[in-house]
Image (tube, rainbow, N blue to C red):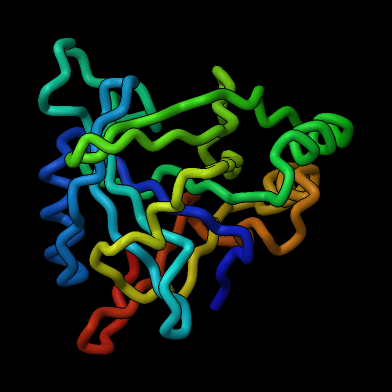
Length: 215
C-alpha cells in the first residue's frame, strides 16, 4: 500500500454536492460535514483521514456546485461541468516551501502554475484562507500545491474520520506522468504511479467495521 508523505487532501467531485455526500456515505458509512462555499461557484463537505490511528493533517474534500450559486451553469472547477457521477478528480500536497517548489519544478521543465490566493467561509462564517497553484491549464493527474499559512488545516478539525490505507495513480503508461512528478522534486511526497488498464486514481479506505473499500 502507498500513501504520499506530503498528501494534503483528495478531491472527489460530482455534478451535485448532496449526491456526492450520499455516494460516499453509502460506500464508507461516513457522512461528510459541510465545509463551506467558494467564490468559484462550488461548495464542499469534508471527512478527515487517519493513518495508523492518527488523525490528519489529511482529509477528503467532496465538492460540487454550490446549490446557492446565482449562475445556472455548472462550475468548471475540477471538471465538475463534465461529470455525470462522483469521481476522484485530483489531490493536493503541501510542500515546505510552495514558492521554491514552483521555481524548482519550472527549472526542471514542468510549470505547476502561479501561486494564487483562495478562500471560503465555513457554515459558522469563519473565513479560511490559503494559497495554491491553480494554473489555467492545470493537469488533474498532477497534484496541485497548497499552503495553509496561519489557517488551521481542515483535516485537524473536529469532523468525522475514516482510515486511509492507500492512494495511488493508475496509468496505462506510467513513464510520462512519473517524469512530471519527478520534476516537482518532492520524492515520495506525491502519489505513486502504477500501471493499469484505465487511467485514474485508486483510493483505498478502511471502514469502521474493518472492511476495505476502494473508490
